[in-house]
Amino acid sequence: MGKAILTAMEDGTGDLVPAAGVDLQAGEYPVPLFASAQAVDVPFDVAIDFSRPAATIAVMELCLREGKPLVTGTTGLGEEDMMRLKAASRIIPVFYSRNMSLGVNLQLALVQAATKVLGDAFDPEIVETHHNLKVDAPSGTALMLAEAIEHARSGESELVFGRHEKNKRRAKEEIGIHSLRGGNKAGEHAVYFLGDDEELIITHRAGSKRVFAQGALKAAAFLVRQKPGFYTMADVICI
Image 1 (tube, rainbow, N blue to C red):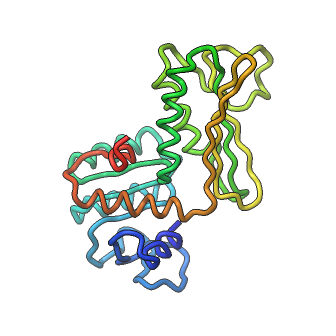
Image 2 (image 1 turned 90 degrees about the vertical axis):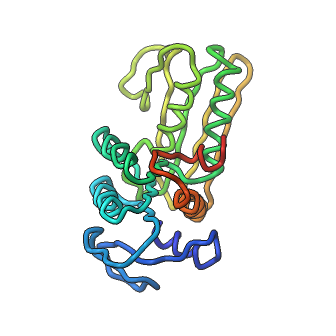
């Protein structure tokens, strides 16, 4: 993602220019590269983070130290990590999204609308497909889609991750989530609403990581103009 963001900047996406990078692996980059967030000693206006939870907290601490906004798209953050991000948002602007794609965030709105209209007559199932190097499953985006359905429902929901351990009929409150891994697929998320004699499928396919980089840059350009607070992509695209 770091390389994708640098490429998007070079292509003129937004008005941002790179100031520095943080990466454990050395390489040829057009900016100073640091092995840790703590070591960064160059001025910057906003930090964009796509890493692992421990590294995200280190970048957050850098932003707090410098009084700068933080954009993060790291998935796999635990409850304590999220509490720390929200606490930081009382001091600096913090933007968080498990998927930076503008299309996916529109998909979330469509899924909520479909849930409200179709109600309990349709059973929702989520299928996500990613490349064979992706570590977390299900994807953060799949969880976002499940949350969108939960928020639009009137009753309780139960997330069911696959059904290999479930030897009984599907309950109405279930939201099934299924993960596929293989090849170099950037990401696909399909939400199935399965009813009697008809079905609705709302699908988003990412052809490359560029769409996530463009969304992150859009979020960063938005965040540098904001007061301290906790922001999401809904604030950027005004859903």
